[in-house]
Image (cartoon, rainbow, N blue to C red):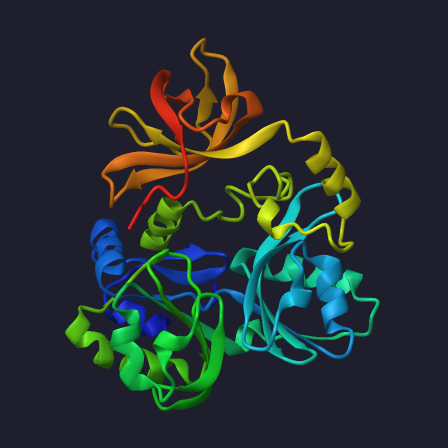
Length: 360
C-alpha cells in the first residue's frame, strides 16, 4: 500500500484511512455531511496526491495528444486546461483526464489514480511519434482547495491575483513560499477553488500554510467520501462507475468533449454511433420517496421490466434526497420521465432530471 507525502498528517488528524487505488487514503475526518457542507459553504482541502501525472514533450506532443484523446487539444494555449477522454478501440473509454498546456510543445496529462499504469501503457503503445513521455506521478502531490471562500482565503499565499484565474485556466507561480507551483482553477466539487500541483518535498509546507491562511475562513480537511457526494451532486462522471471500458463517451453524455473535427482512436466508429444514435444514455434521477440508490441497482419501468442500471447513487447532503446516475434505454431517458429503482425487491419511484442536481 502506497502512502502520500501527507499520510502521517491525516493519521495524526484522526482520519479514517482506507485503501483506494493502491494508496492509503483519508476517507473521512468528522463525517461526510459536515465535510460536504464545509466545501459547499466555506473552504475544504483534499489530498488527492494519488492522481497520476504524465509529462509529454517535443514537437509531436500535440499530435500524439490529438491522436489518443477525444477533445480538440489544438485550441489550448499556454495556461489553459481541457477535460477530455482516452477512447479505446472498442467504443469504450480507457480513462478521462485533464490536459494542461504547460509550454509550447509541452503538456501535462492528469489521469485517474486507479488507471495510471493502464493509461501509461495505452498512450505509450500509440506513441509512434517519438514524443518524450515522463511518468512523474510518484514525485508530485496534488491538493484540491475547494469552496466559495477558497480564493479569498488563499490570496495571502501568492503574489498573483487568484481571482483573475478563469475556470479551466492555470498559472505557474509562487504559492505558500514555494516557487513554480501549478495553481489551477479546476476541481471536482462544483463549488469553485483550486487544484495545487507541487513536488512531494514541498507539499507539507504548503498544507500547513494553507491551513494557517484558511483558519479564519473555517477551513477543514476533507476526505474522499465527501468528494464523491460533491461530484455526484454536480453530475460529474466517475471512472469505473459512470464511464468505463464498455461505455462510449456519447452514451455518457460526453459528446461535448468528443470532437470529430480531427481523427482520433476509434473516431470513425464513434462518429457512426453519433449519426445513428445511441441505444442507451446516462441519465440523472432523483428519488421520489426517501430511499438511497446504490451502484448496480436495477432501473425498471412501470411494468417492472429492467431498462437499465444505477452507476452512482447517494443521499445528497445538500438536498436531503436520494440522487443517482444510471444508464437507461433511450426511450426512457427524457427529463421528467418516471422510472423506478429496484431496492431490495421494492420498485421505488424516481424521476429523470436535468443536471446538475445541486443548484447554487
